[in-house]
Picture 1 (cartoon, one colour):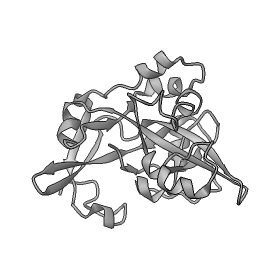
Picture 2: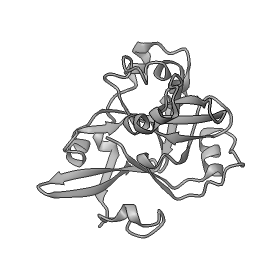
Picture 3: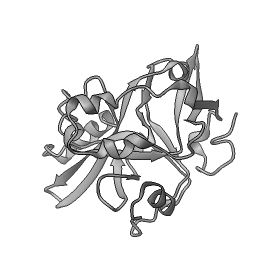
Length: 228
C-alpha cells in the first residue's frame, strides 16, 4: 500500500520539471512528508497549466452527505489497479480525471515478527518522479465549497517491494517520464490505461531503513530519509 509520501521539490521546481505554472496563492514549502489520513492539501498535476492542490483521500462527486465523506475518504487513499474500472468510487475518475502525484520517494513497512520496520523507497536516477493518481471534485451543498481530492493507484509489488511491503505485497504505480503526459491524455482507452498500471522495475528502485519514529519529526529533520 502507499500511505506516506515525501516531496523535496517546491512549486517553482515542480513547475519547471513538469512544464506548468506554480500556484502562488498556496503557501507550500518543501520538504513535505504527508500521511494519507491527514487529508492535507498536496500538489498534483492535471491537464491544467497550473499546479493543483488536492487532499489525499478521494471523495466521489456523487456523495451527498458530508458525514459520509469522513469514513469514505480513509478507504479511498489508494485505488487497486486490478479493480479500479469496476469500483464505484474510481470508475469515472480513472477514465476522465487522471493526475500525476509528484514525489521524491515514499515509505513502506516491513513486518518481522512483532516489529514493523519503516523503509524509504526512491528511484536511483530520478530525484523527482510521478505516481499515477486519479482525482475528483466534490461539492458540499451545506457550505457551497468545492473540494478537490485524489487517490494513488497501487499494483502488485515487484520483488524489491515484496520485501519492503511483505504484509500486503503492493506498491504505488510509478510512471516513466515518457508516460506522464500520456497518462493525462483523456483519449486513452481502458486497455491503454491498464497497460500503464504495471509494477516498476525493481533494479531502478532503491530502499533504505529509516528511524521508527520518522513520522513524529519534522520533514527536514535528519534521519527522515537517511539510514536508521
